[in-house]
Image (cartoon, rainbow, N blue to C red; front, side):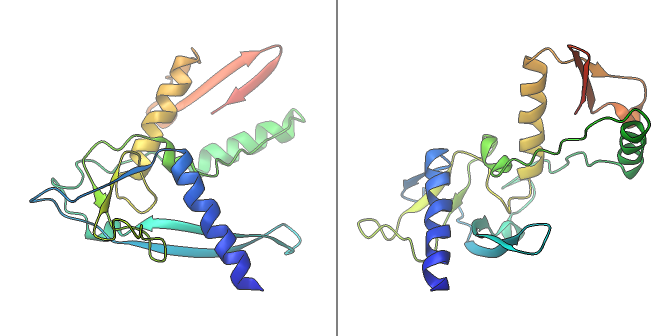
Length: 187
């Protein structure tokens, strides 16, 4: 019975990747390297520890990437615990709502900045082209540069909405604030 649920989760993951135009099936060009992929499985539970769903994710084996060849930069900002504490303190002081948004396939939205190839996912190799590989058009979980690519896309999107950036100190240079109809949004 669980096998059907895992298979359904795998199909959902592949459909998501296909809908997002994450890759193109092709022959491996001469002189190019191909990276492996693997399936990662997780059972998602809610706050009460009740089964919510089965999650399958295809992940690039980024540990095999070579600096300067498969990627150039890997940095991505992370939230500082001090920023979280200030945000929670302000919310408590002014009786504000805090809403957390989680993008299901965040890393899959950024375009790949280098030409990378991965093997077809295990169990889902195209029977017509079993020796073909997947050329990544978008970033994929597991790639060393995936967080950076996603962050750059997020910045580009926020700036296209004309959200002003807070530039008071280096610790807040990656923070945006947005005020509209007496609502303050911090990103």
